[in-house]
Image 1 (tube, rainbow, N blue to C red):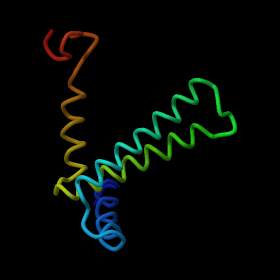
Image 2: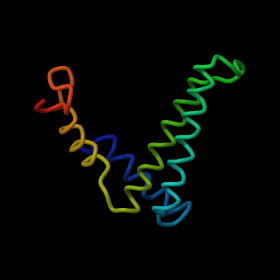
Image 3: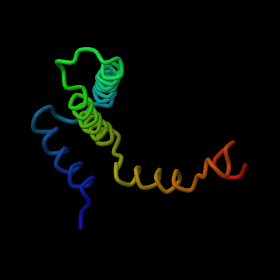
Image 4: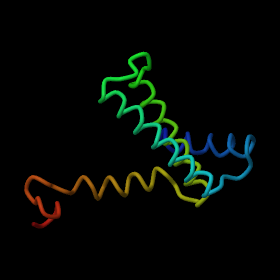
Length: 108
């Protein structure tokens, strides 16, 4: 059974090729950077309590979703499997105990 990440990455591959051709590493990274800026902008305005006519929470959610799409495109351009990367990274991160080992999360 395919996971949601694999399913979305597979669907994205077809969508990307149909709409834009093969994914570009550079275009994907520019997209990630732009969306990270949008996420930061919405978070900052929400924290400052300004531009109350804008839905900052929805803008943050939208930016997170767009970040994921651009990261999928980056992975496609590089031939990476996003699910494998996420699983490997999570397997490493979840082993860290920053309460018990505040210096490096593992041994001290």
